[in-house]
Length: 375
Image (tube, rainbow, N blue to C red; front, side, top):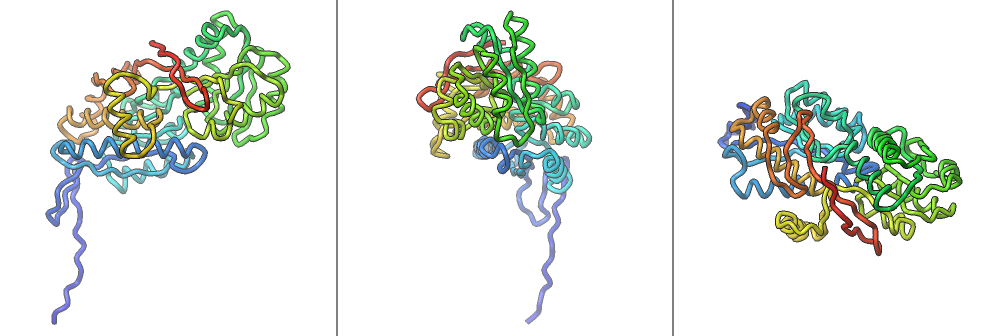
């Protein structure tokens, strides 16, 4: 009996489309990035689910450019160095034509220059720091930016909550909370309020009582905390232990089921700005929530919605471009006018979407829609 040596069949890349020399169908390769592990793991899990759900829907409808979409998803671990590594791998080794991701601004700021240098279109799902899209013309985002979010938080605190004094606490080692805190302070002061304490803490801190003691002594009407959910929960508990009974307000980094699990009664009656609410009555939202719940047996948070939206925005641009060429996709992205779950998306000159924000209240341990704020 003759023995046949195994033959490795190479893949050929033509214009961003992968063709198998063995006769397999060509595919369009899409990259996805999110922090599935690390300090924002729930964000990454939701992001991965949102992207996967959108890709599955497009594939059922025939994919894009007549090709099935193959998703290569990478865990950035919430770390900029790891982010740079996985973005490079997705481009150099996996050969993706576009990337959807990532969540945390500090990681997007590590990945964006890599995409820009390779001319690979990138759309961040939830990085709200303005610096992200400043990297270059191949970088877009699906979310509103911190100047708007900080302004909304300040206006809500001043007008709706009738707060005239505020104390602010934030992570000094993270671009997202640091920027958000600064935008809140600027707007709250412009409105006529007074920021009586502005306290930073180191990344990884778990005991915030030194900062909170100063803040509580200043007797603020409201505490604004721009951190992510895990820190927020601890800060809320420690602030209550020190006697603060007023409302707390924050940003979209609060959006995690872990907030109420860790924070318990301490986060009851608090508020945060977010990108969408599952209670929105628009048909596109109701349809998305129903499909997501059927697929994952859970209500979708804003991270899932933004990832789903970002994937639709990117694939719609590929379809409009009619090619996997990066420059053509980039140009199609810039002219986007699309209704998605988190609102109607059109990009401004800096590739940031102009869209509304919602205010969410923690009530009875649940996220409850409070109001919508338009730009």
